[in-house]
Length: 212
Image (cartoon, rainbow, N blue to C red; front, side):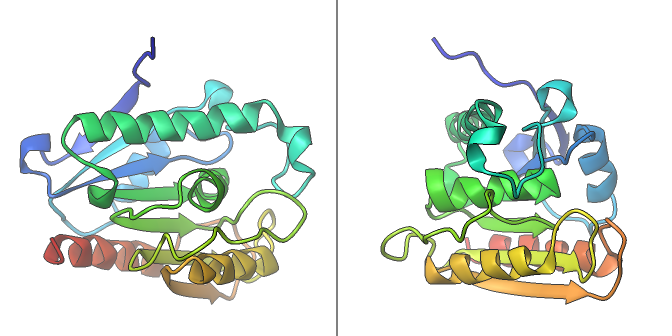
């Protein structure tokens, strides 16, 4: 029998939320980082749900090493994301009313999840400084399972952990799967979330509300 994944929640009461956001933190972070970042967004009638990785790390090694070097933690963490999505559905928010949002390792995990485990019609995807996992190019899922899904991707040109080429390759793979991708890579060499990225996330949430 499945046990519900504990998630930290904040935002508007669930009964007033038009969308929910599944917020996935980065390596050595916690849900508190995602909450602090969400405070930089503009107001929106959404409720945030954030799981916490064991030891604050979703998988042990860098995301560009061979996938087997990050197992079994990677598959366990992908399963956690799936269980969170199922929990949100049980609360009345099917995937099309769920926005996936991740930063750094969390963005890598979500990129891999939507391209390999559950390519489907989510309410939106926000990927701050991340890309799919593994050293090799990833074949896009067949058909266009992400058709109509708005994806926001932001990074910086010389991020110390996530190379520009993997962010760009992930954007291209998401487009092949049918997603509408808004990609921006700003100059810089810090592992940060810019004010522009936060404003763009607010816009995506607003657009998601208006389309429902």
